[in-house]
Structures are given as C-alpha cells and as structure tokens.
Length: 195
Image (cartoon, rainbow, N blue to C red):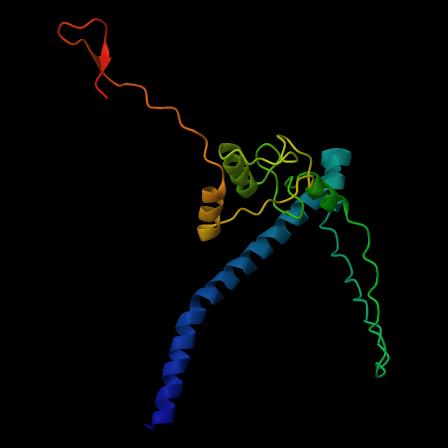
C-alpha cells in the first residue's frame, strides 16, 4: 500500500466522520418537509369546514422575496488635466429622521457625538463638569440641562502646566486653625488653647 493511498483513505474517513452529522440533519429536515406537506394537504381538505378564516389561513403563504435592487453604476470620470482644479464633491443629502433624533439626544458640548447621560452631557463631559464645578472654573455656557451642541469644550491643563497654573493663581489667605483643645490653667481665669 503506497503512502498516497493511505493518505487518501485517511482523508476519506475523516470527511465521512465530519459530514455524518450534517447528513443526519439533512435527513431529518427532509422528513420534516414531508410531514409539512401532509399537514398542508389536510388543511386544504378541512378549509371548507373552517369558514372564511380557515380559507384565508390556507391561502396565505410566505410572501415571495423582493426582487434584488440594481446597484447604481458609478459614472466614469473623465481623465484629469494637468494643472486643473480638483473636482467638487456632490452636496450631501439632508439627514435622515433617525439622524435628527440622534442629534437631539447628543451631548451639550459642541462636536461631541456621544449621547447625553446626565444634565445634558455625555458621561465623559459630565465628569469634566463636576471637576470644573469643584475647582471653581465652570464656564458660563456649561449650564445644567444644556441643549445639544451649545457649550464650547474646555481644554484643561495637565501635568507641569497645571502645576504652574496652580502656583501662579493668587493664594487665598487662610485663617488660622481653630484650637483643638482648651484647658484651664491652675490659678488662671478662663480657658487657654494648647496650640
């Protein structure tokens, strides 16, 4: 027995093993179709007994698939001349109703395409809003429940630039810490702070 014959026999056995389950499924589908045809024959015979609704149910079949739409052929472009200006693109069609609904549900920051989550902002810009409020840097156009695309984006400095900005900011005078413990000294009147 040559190597080629042994290899072919091994591949044939492997294919038979792999395709066995598929062949069983096909046989079961054929049996189901035969049963379905038998049921259809019985319903056609019983249709006169079922009245108008029964006839409509028998006559109703799956609608035929729609005919395939022809694909528009691109127009051939004439060859470009040297030194000629580039051709202008066609003007886009107005947005579909779905696009209008998505624009109405957009984030308040201009240019952000994510959907709004809280107070009119997407999740990322809402976190930025919280940071701006906490640090006292909230711009006037960053309002609560702002309409879509109404607020300009704010670029916050990071790293060394942010540290320099914090150093350059005028420091607010801090009031002295309040005493944490009071004691009465022996022989004295009133209370005295330990700090």
